[in-house]
Image 1 (spheres, rainbow, N blue to C red):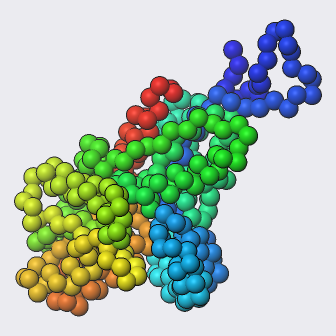
Image 2 (tube, rainbow, N blue to C red):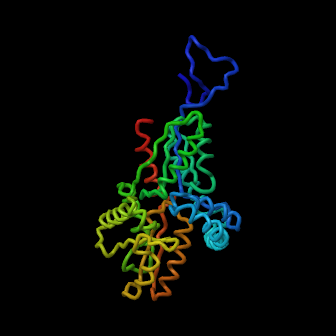
Image 3 (cartoon, helix red, strand yellow):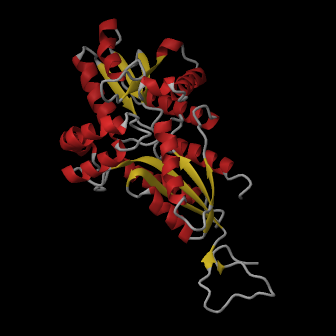
Amino acid sequence: MTSPTQSTAPATQSSPLPADHPGFKMGKIGVLLLNLGTPDATDYWSMRRYLKEFLSDRRVIETPRLIWWPILNGIILTVRPKKSGANYDKIWDREAGDSPLRVIATSQAEKLKARMAGDERIVVDFAMRYGNPSTPDRLQALKDQGCDRILLVPLYPQYAASTTATANDKAFDALKTMRWQPAVRTVPTYHDDEAYVAAIAKSITDGLAKLDFEPQTVITSYHGVPKSYLDKGDPYHCFCHKTTRLVREKLGWAPEKLMLTFQSRFGPAEWLQPYTDKTLEALPGKGIKNVAILTPGFSVDCLETLEEIAMEGRESFLEAGGENYAYIPCLNDSDPGMDVIETLVRRELSGWL
């Protein structure tokens, strides 16, 4: 029997391979964790490269190119890199010399590798939809290591065309360039998965236990998308609401104790509501001056959670008259977070192992 790592090629006893045949590797199973992405640094040109790739994605911005292209290249990519770079600079991991998202994503891959170490066929890696390490590069690396089967794991609990779909698109685009494609599976939406719901509920319980105040309400803030995407059939809005409802039921809380909002809107169009920033500004006027907030749609802390919610959100809430504000981190590479990822991976590898 051929070893999974041994160079091999199709042949029969009656048709031996020529001595100079290059051979190839096969028999390994790749697991590729996929996340949104991050710039390589906070300087203008690093930010511009990242933003151009991100904002050129038709899954993210569905505005017709004739309208969007002059706006993107004439205005946004001239002004926004400096502002975004300053925001990234606030959260940059100085010790690691990298963005928190890439640091934590690296740790997630290493911890999953350790958890899957019982089967030598499995090779674990991670990639970004935008920026580095790129999805095409890591797919090729898995292929070069002999992975003829690869599981794509987009770490977006609530499916959306602008997140899960575009992460898979990038992988499929890379596959189209391969002479010999590996077999591929993708992890489906897991917004209502029992392990995920339990992990989010535990993160809330543990997070609140560390506070020196009692929140009057807890907010689940999800990344927003234009309302038109919902109107076109994107299920993301419904998945977010279901996650919050299931978590609330898991905790045994009343509906008003766990709120849902949407953050990070961009441009003049109407986005999914209620808006996180407007909600934080309005709550103190309604007598709710002690809140905690978390972002269940993000698997890893990043700019949108650490700067927008943990920093800007706090500032807005306190300026509006709030008294106590706490941000509960993402699952990241915590044990409950890794339990979720391992559960998904082992389930979707069924039949391959």
